[in-house]
Length: 400
Length: 118
Image (cartoon, rainbow over all chains, first blue to last red; front, side, top):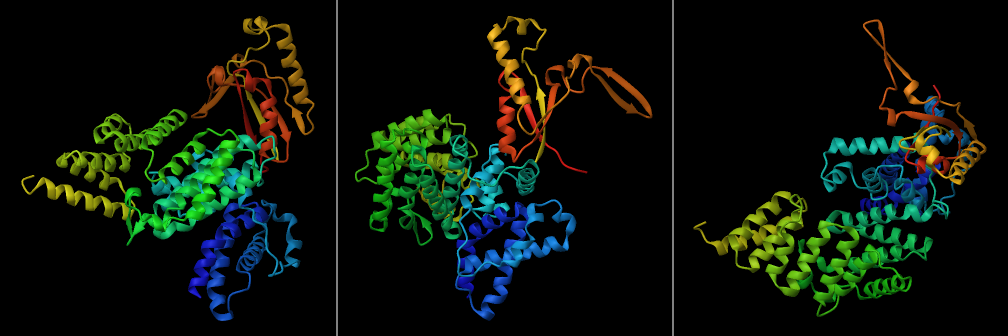
């Protein structure tokens, strides 16, 4: 029963919350009601058995709790959309019917350009990703109180400024897309980098990507993002061995999801056919090339160069450095890494450590690994770095 | 939803200035026509004409004493140049209308502020 509850929480929380926000027009009230519904489920399901449709049960229960709360608190009712709603209580949702998936509406609301971009990302991760405030704070290298304040402000603004809960009409849709794609990509990465607890986030991002691709079939970047996520995610099972990170070159290819790779490449072809050459399409092309054996490293390095020009991002330059190191040797990679303004980014230091190690400069490699260890949060990555550090420390000898 | 649209002229050329006079007649005509169309939009209540910010007087009270300074509270170029009220479905509709106000594309900016009730 605990498993069913946990599964329901993982799979349904985003949809339940989206339905409640759509219904109530109030993020805080919806979050509270959703939380209450799960608490009631934890109490009743073990006793009475799980309902046949947990999602609908949760939405109905959360809705009723929210309405109860509003009836108790008339001053609150005066300020919410719920004034018109009370008759909905008399029409309890049939447990057998499904409720509409309003997560896309929620995404466009959370990613509204009238919100600060950091708030858009945080809010989407909080509502659809189900990340906690501390997790989001850590992902964005800010303090918890700052992140909590950011979320409170964003929710307050949505309500006070009348940011609509809807998929934007056609003439607004293209402008709203870039932020949504960036946010979906971030959710994907959040699910990808911390595998034991947030695996479902990658799947969530892929589902959102699919929905966006349906909604905007002519937009190559949507397909590019979806293709990239599918191709990365296809290697998920091979990325960890006994809880430790396995680098691409060492992965067991039999664990790769070949069907998903085929799907990803088909989506990428579609993006190309739409003449896509934006950042997500290029990243998908890179991901696809990484799956070939042997890898076309000069071509990968060239595409990273194209991506760096499109995005002006030092993180992309770092990736280009890695590809160039593979194609032309560690020193050529190091030359690119030197001078990148990424001092607080643990991948810069772990990559430098790796390249220095290959050059036999073990003492410098150890220093770089120590810098990386001081910055990394993920346990699997920490263990990988600690192993590397042990190796180079051993190679340096006790004299150091 | 009720909004107040605060029009900040920024570097927008204003009638009476040399920059405005330097504009071709058809551009001036287009600006007037755009303001007219904005003011005739359903749901919009035009504001009254505001004299230039240079004519403003800013009032403070310190220790019970009324202090006045010449000019607006903020810098001249940041000062409010006009306003209107809008009744709209949501922020998207308000943003679309704000984008049609000429100042928004001529060097100024429009602040869209939702209104509440006490």
